[in-house]
Structures are given as structure tokens and as C-alpha cells.
Length: 631
Image (cartoon, rainbow, N blue to C red; front, side, top):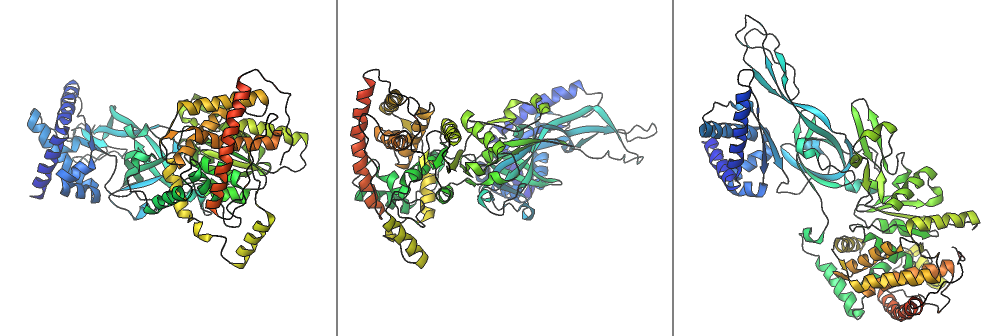
């Protein structure tokens, strides 16, 4: 009776999803093949069944529950149903033992497991993690045919065996059956290791922590190192086998949970108290970074750059950050706001780009920190403390925007797509100069060409305010205006929500970036790197995302150019035509800081318009500028 209920529900589901038509087409192809091999062997019937699980629950709820809890039993029931459908429709005698059903399930109706303890799981379940390692594509035995060679034996009927198994014994004579080699059916499979995303920032992280999953046939096509996947798996004899896989995307359209009322309240309060300035949101949130020991107005240029870089990681060009000075604590604190931040993992004994390992069983591709931090931040610390070879690999990846796994010459015969990947992480680093020698200055020029103009770790607050903050922290006292300090969990949620937004850059914003680039290069040819246009565009897009605007406006670009002019003035000297307005903030309250910055940026907006008009109108080339005031 129970089987009859399953049968009715499954046929109704297949009819609704046109599965019966696909089954009929597969049966016709099978009949043609069996007619060709009729006198020699019995062919297995392979069928791939793609299940839309929400629809399956609607039309066959009891069977869906059975499939989750007892997938092997559910597949046996499907075999019987398929056997009856094929035999009835086409008048053939297809044995259920010849049917092999490959289930494909993209998602299950519950949250993927991220505790990475699959040993306690049974049935079907989902895991969610970063693809940290994979094998190359290898062959596996899908099925083969055995028969008995004994002349006096009546058990010579062909027997289909699925998978890689020992030869079966003849039921008549007890001898091992012989394989019919030409009946072998092989497929492709890949073994992958998945790492829990939260593990990357954990002090307990180990190089090979993760779980292994086998992917077969069509599931082998989209397996990219460093990408976060949700995988539907079931337990098999040798571990876990995948039944479906899909990338975990991060766009605003796929954030299905409602926005937290706390975030809405934060945005509304900022706009209300700051007069709706186009710069207020970014300046307020930037001031909230690293408030553990310093006032909100400290390190504001660097913190603004870090915030914009955080919001750029889901875009086409994650913005790298080079900071000048001793700012490790500031950058480490900001890195923790990234969902996929990797903090100082380069110190591990692995290549930053990843590597190809030749093993006895084949070739293993292992992701390095640059890939593991995809759609996140890779913070590598102080440049002089990094191994020179490792830093060279990182700099090459940042400059080319490509990650190539370290491999031997023999690996050049592999498909290039499995050795080279696009850079999808923002690399952060800082450099503390000591003797300011010509060699160090030349090194800094090289870094600027790779990372773009650096950000400055200039504190920017008076000694009196900083001393008061440090004393308050040491004494356990409340800092200035503690009511305006956001909880870090809310700030992290804001960064995640904002960075997922899709934005478009307006034509006027594009024109402003180009005009500024031309004007700056005319005045100071060596000051602005060639890749600055790309970086300014990405930072402006990030500014719009955080401000919750879908269009990048001129004001977004102005805020970014202001950061650039601060650095250029510090390193190369101020503009010879007219010095731009300077950041003059010393507040202990974020709202006070935002209002001070609004005044400065309005002044800078007027200065920028005058600056471009003066330099674009005629051919002006100043004397060669050199680095002067290096921090």
C-alpha cells in the first residue's frame, strides 16, 4: 500500500515536471543500443533524475521525507517505478537490477550544515564551505558486465555490476565470473576538500582541516578553488558523495532575510542628524572602525580607505590597500569585519597563490591564502617581515589580477583553467619605513605601481584627546560619547549588506574621474599611477554601495579623490597652483566628526572644479616631482 502511494506521487511529480517525457526519450535510446548489442551482452540503463525539491515536497511529500532519511531505499523504489513505466510503455523486459539512477538535487529545504561534523549525519544533508583543494579529473568505473566461462556451467548469463567491485561469483559453479572488457562504462570524478569559512580567522586553523567529497560526471564541471559552495551530499562506503552543488552568491537580490531594524535605524539617525549629506554615511561608519583605544577621529583617512575596500570585494575589482606606518592593529581590527577575511595566514608554510602537488594517486590542486580569501580580505601584515619570494608572488597576483598555482614544468600540459584563477580578494598590507634610504624609496615606488597610492596612518587627533582615551581604557572607564559607538556585529552586518549591492557609475562620474586623472598627470606626471582610474572607480562604487545608492554620483568620486589628494600632498608636496583643503577634525563624537568632514568636502568640491578647469584647458607640464615627505 505504501509503495502504491509513492508510485502515484512520483508519477504525478514526473508528469508535472515533464520527467515522463525525458524518461521515455532515454528509454528509446536504450532500446536502440540494446538492439545493437543484442547477441553479446546486457546493457545497463543509466538515468539522471534532476529533482526540484520544493516541488517534490508539494507533490510527493512522503517520498521526499523518505529520500532525505533513507536515500538508498528511495532510489530502489524509483528503480521499480521506472521499470514498470518503461516496460509498460515500450513492451520490453527491463530488469530493475539493470537500472542506475543518478540523483541531482541542487538544494534541500533546510539550512546547509557548517559545523563540518559529517560523521554524525545520515541520509541526505547539505554542507557549506570554501573549496580549498581538489584533484584533477580522473576516470572511475560506472559499470561493467561479468559472465561465467566454465563450459559445463549453466550460469553463463551476463551480470551487470555498478561501481568498482570485486568480480561476482557464479551462483551455479561458485567460480569468479570474467569481465567483458568491451562492456566497461567509465565516468569522470573529482575529489574535493571543503573548508569552513569561519575557520580562516580562527587561531586553531590547520592547513588540511576540512572534509572530502567526491563529485561524479556532470558535477565535475564547475569546481573553482576559493569559491564558497553549498553541496548536497550523502554518505557512501568511502566517505561523502555529492548529489548537487551550487555557488553561494552574494548579491542584494539573494539576501532573502529582511534588513535588520537596527541597521535601518542607524541609517535614518545618521541622515537626520547630519542633514542628509552625500558623505555622511561613509564618514560615520569609517569613524567607527578601531575605536577600542583611540577616538573616532583618529586614523580617519586610513579607516575610510579600509571601509571602502571592504565594500569592494564583491565587485569586479576588489581594491588592494597599501598603508604607510605602523597600523597593524587598525588593519587587523577592520579585517575582522569581512565575512571571508584571512588574517596573516601567509606565515603558514604554503604558497600564497596555492600549489600543485604530484601524488601517487594523481595530481592535487591546493588553494593558497589568495584564493581562500576570495570575496574577502587577505591581510598580510608588514611588508619587510614577509618572505621576499612570497611577497613577490602576492605582488604579481595583485598587479596582473590573476592567481597562478605554483607548479612544475610537467603541469604545463594541464588545462590552463585549473591552474590560473582571477584574483577576487582585496590584499591589505602596510609598510613602516626606517632609514628613508633611496633604496626604500625606490621600493615604495614599486609598491605604489602595484597597489596604487598608499593610505596614511596619520592619527589626526591631539595628544590630549588620545591620552585621555588611553587612560580611560586602562582604567576601564567609559569612552567619550559611548552612545554613538556601534556594536561591531551591526557594523559587520552593514558592511556585508552594503557590499552586496549592485551599482552603476554615472557618465558624469566617469568624466570627473578621467578629467582628474588628466589634470593630475599634467601637474605631477609621476604622482598618480596608471591603474588609479580603475582604483578610483572601484572606490567610488564602494562609496555608493555603503551610502545605499544604486548610481555612483560625482559626490562619491569627490570623496575618493579627496583621499588621493591627501596622499599626493603628503608624499609629493602640495599642489603648486592652489593647495587643497586639509582634513581638520579632532572630534570625539562621530556626528561631530561627520559635520566637520562635510564642511571640508564641500570646500574640496569647489577646489577640485577649479583645479580641473585650470589644468584641462591647456597643456601644462610641471617639473618632475619626487617623493619628499615619506612617512
